[in-house]
Image (cartoon, rainbow, N blue to C red; front, side):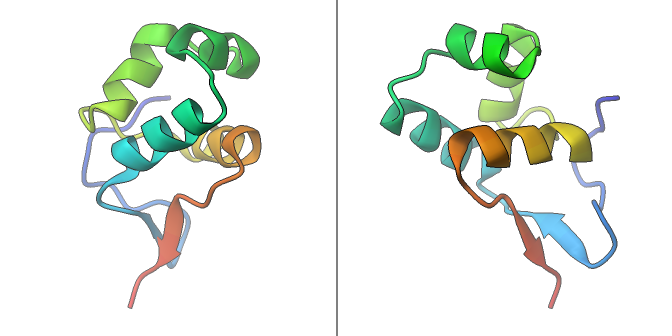
Length: 79
């Protein structure tokens, strides 16, 4: 389920380098704690914390859930 850093995502797309910071900023903008976001996404708080610290690359499924819940885009086209 969890992927190590450096893996390519959906064909032609990759996650932005500062994905953890983008997720944290979006979560804080919505006044959500890590625990609240974890409950909404049915994920472990520790998993989200590792993602926000850029020590864990989220799965494609989790990226989609984060994008939808936080109303952000995390993937970008590879140039």
